[in-house]
Amino acid sequence: MKAAVFHGAGQVEVMEVPRPELEPDEVLIRVGYCGICGSDLEAYHVGMYEPGMIIGHEFAGTIEELGPGVTGWQVGDRVTANDAIPCGQCLPCTQGRLTDCESLTMIGVSADGAMADYCKITARGLHRLPDGVSLRQGALAEPLSVALHGVRQSRLKPGDYALVMGAGPIGLLTLQSALLGGARGVAVTEVDPVRSRLAAQLGATLVLDPTRSNVSVEMLRFTGGKMPDIAYICTGAAAAFRDAISLVRKGGQVYILGLCTEPVEADFMSVALGNLCLEGSLAGWAEFPAAIDFIAQRRVNVEALVSHEITLDGVPCGGFERLCTPGSGAVKILVRIGGER
Image (cartoon, rainbow, N blue to C red; front, side, top):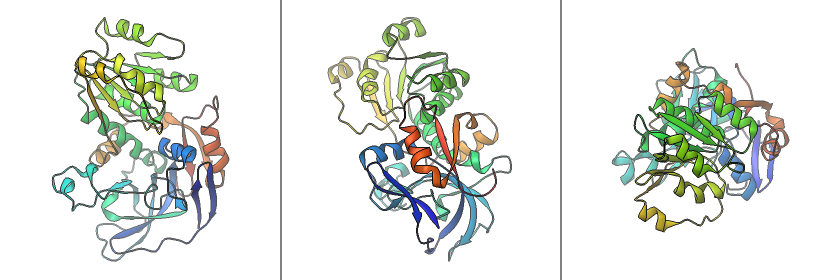
């Protein structure tokens, strides 16, 4: 079968690899769609995945084969899957803190992923797609679960003002999730004009280019003089991590959903004097069913994020190189591998 294989920084190759062999309690998925994630892009830049890994963890497809011991599923079932699989046995897992698992398996990160004709996954990670949700939409359940988890774990309350820093896929989904969570208004900072326009279309109260505006002054105006209650960092840009501390009210929260691979200097005196809460989160195991339900009910617009659809052969140039090119207009790139839309 064909698969997109990571070989190191700047090196992703589509090549022939063996079809996965199933262990007990595993299923084989014929992949329909797989998204290119921001963490995949960071790995492409700096090489943080293991060479030889099949990438891809945002996906949907149909069950091709059931391994020994799998029950409750049938060949042909349309599914998506949670990419972060907790062991269920360590202390955090037994306490219900599944995303804090000490032996978390991450599809496409620490185990072969889904940017391939087929992938395998434990049946525990599967989620059935309702009839009204396409495979294309189902591939976006994973990033939506990440955004939902972040907003649910944050201190956001109905009536709060929120700032979303970065209008990539996670930022745009966090924007929508914060509005669903009752935010009075959500401001978004973004330098790319295509992503800025999309943020406005998806409900942002205010959209600013941080390189052209005094964000602190604009936040005071936006909130009527008190600054946002919470800032969600949804970008890997180091400047956002440095600036966020000064862009929330006293007693507010900075919530980290983006990945920054370079060291960031932080003003921790302002954190202490401002009585600020700094927090972050990984994945969204518990939020996966809600993500699928919100897509089915059209409460979150995931289709709007898809700027490009490419084939598996186009992943190195049409995918990663396009995302690395300023002004390309890329937001979310989906790889169509097989199956229905």
